[in-house]
Length: 554
View (cartoon, rainbow, N blue to C red):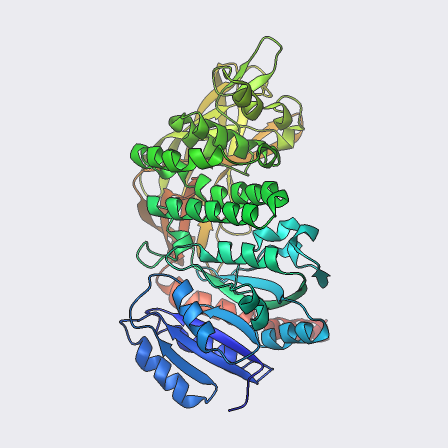
């Protein structure tokens, strides 16, 4: 048998439905001289039958079945490395794909210059809505060859092993294999590869398609989406400690602050948005695992974070778990704290008391939020629904509390409105916020969802109402935070006198930041007839033909 140019390993476990799609993306590669190894982690579904049928269809495919389930990604990858025949190696998960030119493009870079690995852009596709994006786009904007990770430590954020093509000689020379028996093995493997490589090349072209299911059921969620498990937190921290040990042992301690910043900005941040939804026992366990590790991180890494994230971290380190929930709501959305405290010098801090320790004062100080001075359209307020009452039909009565810690709103009643736009036309419902004390306002508003103006074809999607304030001709729009556990309510609304019927559901968002969420779903004739017809009419060819006819008739 001739030696193939590249071996691509597809790891699979109980994924018979999606395995053919992954393998088809390899068979369609523009560079055809490849070996495909399906490495099965002892599946118990139809995967073995599907894999053997695929192997029978293409002589390039080999099927490898592990004698027992390893419980992770490392063992099936390592077993495939042992039998791989090519000088260059790639890895693919069974629920993802390679773009048609992935192998061709990465291999061309290896042949142009001798490097240890090549890497490219990763396209992320949301399974729930089809939305596409690029993973860490700022790291793959141009073609470049780096002589070591120190040339751009930001690449530690790009820890995927699947976006790269490795020289087999590089992996063997350093005895580099995927660590078995742990989760988040990609992070350790990639950190080791970055540090051990003398040179590697980055290209801006897409070389991997990563399908994301952010709201998969707990039983079907990927390891990175199992953040509800305390064992997941423990696994992630364990891998970070292994990376730290590797950096010390291999003389890369200069990377420690960059690696710590990556952990805080990426790994910890993934948990932070979920913290408002965790119970006391979970939060206590989270703090018990996380806090000892946070104490080992470089202070400079904390200083590089946005203030809102530094506040959450410090409250956790101080054991203020109830406050952690408050601070974690609305991260990255400009949501203000409920209260601020000022010391004798006038410096303000998150919460209703001045912090006792120097570190807490440094981390909880709010001077860089400019609560009192930033322009009104970007000012920070906190709008919370304190009571939600369902009325007849699709009517809701909301009791709203607005916190204004920067005292930006003048004394007296405030003009406010709820804004909601399920179609092109906004539904604007004015109401009044009355002062309770300086920095605190309350009001009530009745929201009739039947009054929303929908397009002729209806609307199928989700919207979150905004709270709008006006002051001296300036407008501020902010998030409306809902109670996290109010009961879901669905009403049937006969829009357009029954011609555009929808089921309208009001529910808590269920994830950070926890907004009031309203979902429209067309039913009846709207769903069966009107929407399909409008979609056909809205196709570009039909629209262009209509414009042509209109121009002729002028």
